[in-house]
View (cartoon, rainbow, N blue to C red):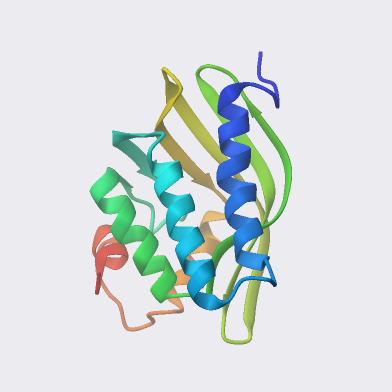
Length: 165
């Protein structure tokens, strides 16, 4: 049975809530925030399989790929947004030995544009290691938001997410 106390749920809570807490901590200057975010990301990646599979959001921009792509994907999203898919509120996190679900509200900004949405992160685990992740949001809106950051782009989803990184 999925619970909020399962070790995979606890890990997901730290992944989502821990990064969000660092991002909004007013006591941190930019350098310290960047250092802590990097440490946090390394800690999270340590529980991901080197063969991790990501299923990105979107319809036109949907990609299923591995860890090498994941790093490029995060960099590209950061290039297209000032605040890149930040958790605003995490409503519920449940997990068991095999799957985890994160339900929350997320925000992405670019200049004066703010896109706030309810979404899900679905995770698959093997031996308490994350092996697969799905980003579940409004696919057409996902495409619209990120494509508007590079309106001249014309190519595949994989080319879009790896462009310039």
